[in-house]
Figure 1 (cartoon, one colour):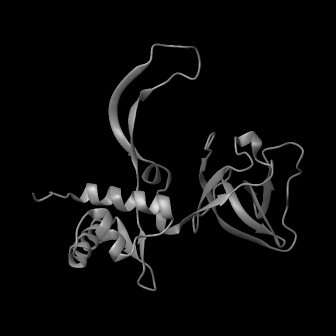
Figure 2 (cartoon, rainbow, N blue to C red; figure 1 turned 135 degrees about the horizontal axis):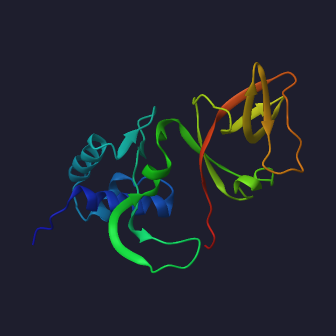
Length: 195
């Protein structure tokens, strides 16, 4: 009996392998996870995923995920204030990478250390998504190298003076003395409560 495979099915298998192994499968491994014998069939699916924007090749020709993801159902809303009747119905399927990362080609993750941004809800061990090359606006949270040290702070500019401010009153504002290099703007924060 011939098994009918679809692009979403194959993507899920590649995505699961990538999440578990933190790398793309070899062609032999891909043949096994897709359930085929021929590497030419694997090549067919890889080409399809590249054409659909799911996979990409880096400068050395190695495959990497462009947006392999695991979508989760959006089941409704929950009140964070006074209790109200739960409203559960499948509304949509959301992929976290698409929801959180507008420009994956210029974005990267950093793990947070320290407590200077706790007032903004950014805690130690959270992950932040940084978008490179984005022009910061007043009030944006940025990643910057200031006088030889890296930091994440609010960006404030008045005239030609740039001040970096913490979201914790125990840290004083920073005014760069010799150098300010802005590496990117923080676009999202991710916190995991349980393993």
